[in-house]
Every structure is written in C-alpha cells, then in structure tokens.
Length: 168
Ligand SMILES: Cc1cc2nc3c(=O)[nH]c(=O)nc-3n(C[C@H](O)[C@H](O)[C@H](O)COP(=O)(O)O)c2cc1C
Image 1: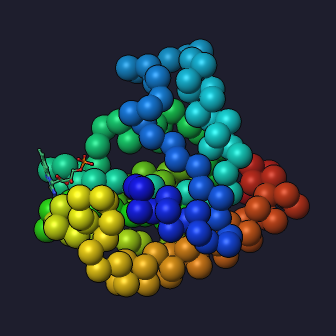
Image 2: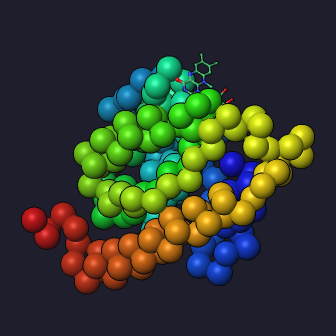
Image 3: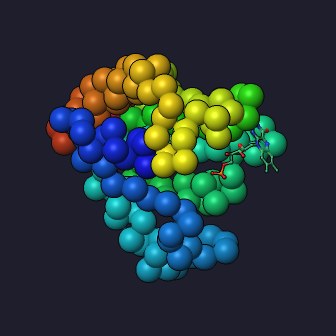
C-alpha cells in the first residue's frame, strides 16, 4: 500500500486518498440507517473518479473487511473505473482479484484489464517497505494507470453530461 501511494503521489494525473477498512469504524452488519462512518465512507467514494483496490489473498479469496466496505457503498461506485493491486503467496492475489471482478461488475463499475500483482510479496519488499526490483512492477502499474486515467476522465465527462441512472 505504501509503495502504491508513493508511486501515485509522484504521478501527474492522480491525487490518491487511502480508504482502509481497518481504520473505519464500520458496523458489524448492514443497517437500514447508515451510521456516520458509513455515510462518510459513501461521501469519500462519491468524490472519487476511480479506484485502485489493494487486496491480499486468503484461502483463494479476498478478505471479509474489504467485502463489507464494498457492500456498504452503493450508487457511488457506478460508472467509475476500478483497477487492482494484489499480493499473496504463489498466486500474487490474482484469484482474489478475479473474484473481486465479479463483485464490481454488479456495482456497475468499469474494470481495468491490467493489474499489478506481487507473488511471495514478503520476498519482494525490504524491511523499509521498498521494492527490491521496482522496474517490473512500475511497468505494470503504469499500464494500469494509463487505462484508469483514460476511463476516469471519459466516465467523468459522461456522468456530467448524462446521469448514469437515466442512461439505461
Ligand atoms: C490463513 C492464510 C491463508 C492464506 N491463503 C493464501 C492463498 O490462498 N493464496 C495466497 O497467494 N496467499 C495466501 N496466504 C498468504 C497471504 O496472502 C500473505 O501472507 C499476505 O501477505 C497477507 O497480507 P496481509 O498481512 O496484508 O493481510 C495466506 C495466509 C494465511 C495466513
């Protein structure tokens, strides 16, 4: 996560904001009346033009707190692009990403094909959280960011000219 934020902060087209499920005071279940934490989360998602979901992989899936965060938000996701950065053991979190693609289709997002993944992540980063060999990951990230930026701009223009919900 720190690596990604650092790379994005140095990028001319992105203004990153981190939303970490562990730092949100989300309730244990979905409630009819949105709690202040859920209301704030929705506002933060509504403000964004695109998303990069960072996920590890546990038993071939993505973590429950991430799913709860995703499900706590609704129309605020719509007509916006989503890219993925994943990490884990042998799979580099790619199985978790494939499952997340199914979830985000349901939320009317546009999925960026290119992603970044770190297999045996603990070997790739040093004690300071720096990548030992950053070139390959940077290339993958750049490809993903180009598409994310293109879709982010295109869909913002489209949402402005015609609300997504009336476009069906
Ligand atoms: C219970 C458990 C199950 C795991 N399952 C997988 C897995 O299915 N695939 C994989 O690539 N890595 C797996 N891992 C490795 C984790 O993805 C890896 O430890 C990762 O760094 C965890 O990230 P986190 O500490 O940020 O949650 C597993 C780890 C644990 C503890």
